[in-house]
Length: 215
Length: 258
Image 1 (cartoon, one colour):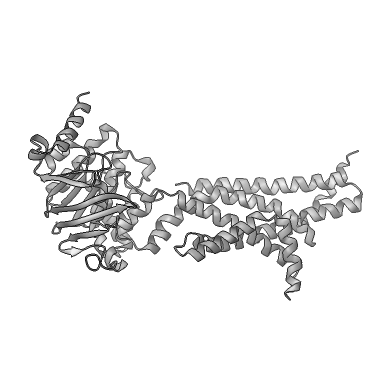
Image 2: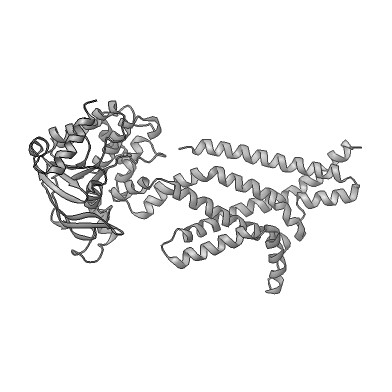
């Protein structure tokens, strides 16, 4: 029988654990945006080695499951003498994986802008830095909002993977809860509700941003 | 009115890979006059126009603006310094077939942007000047609109104001009315006629034979990358000698008989 009280009781510990979910995905996307911008610059660069470096970065990170990457990073760091808490390894891995997708989102948005947009800037005598900051980037960023929100939602869900390295986020907390109460269904259903609530909020935020930045 | 530029095009060649797009083009564009470039599509007229502000890089020959080579330091030599090239471009206005307005800015901001970033004007002065430029093209009541809220004809007039506000000495038009609904062509052509009457040097790639006939001081006909003939409109349009021009005009007239 489904126990409503066990289900409801599960929310408190899970909500506490949600802080880690939000920390991993929030910091992950924030750092991912920065690293992704850098990778995107390399990918669009005139230099061939830079483009190759970006291509390798993106291919590896998109091509290997995040779970495997987490385990690799988690077990690799001590070997090379870096001793950091699991949460740091989790955030870094998430950010790095996110950067690969984000750089592709931005590259796509920039390439999608009509050539005439920059031509108009060039023809008027504008310097490249101004055509980037005033013409290309504002449009590319606005264009990429839906995909960035999508990526953020994917990250919130992917953050459940960091449970394997011992970070007490929603998924791991629900496993713990299930173990204590012997009622896995209630615990996992509560986790599902929590994930859904977070992501519905993010989707709403996305729509608001899209509307605000509409060109 | 600032003084108008002249353009001298000498033996210009342009290749796209193997394709020889412009073949030894020689053309003099006198100051304060309107030169129309006509010819079938793919004839190289847009490429030639875009060589004048070096938006398209020509491979050999010379393009001189008021006697100054654009794009290269010496004929066939090194590329000129980017800053110098930008400075030259800032005196050459360009209007595109697809308007190319910046969609995230209002009409007024579109016009002011170049004044701020290229001319270094203060924002308030730039906005004021933009307002004047927009008023001159009849858009004083549309300054706060984004391009998506304007008709094609209005957008193209904003684009012309954007170029004219920079005080250019030369204006390039790349099929400025080809993307417009027929009923909106007139308002754009009227703005262009006013500019021409003000003594602006204009080079216009166009399919509007009426405009070419009545406003142009000279017409250059291109086909397959060759400059077939340059002359006054009456000669080119009424008594063309070359068979390629005759056949082009025949097709044009047949299409316009409805």
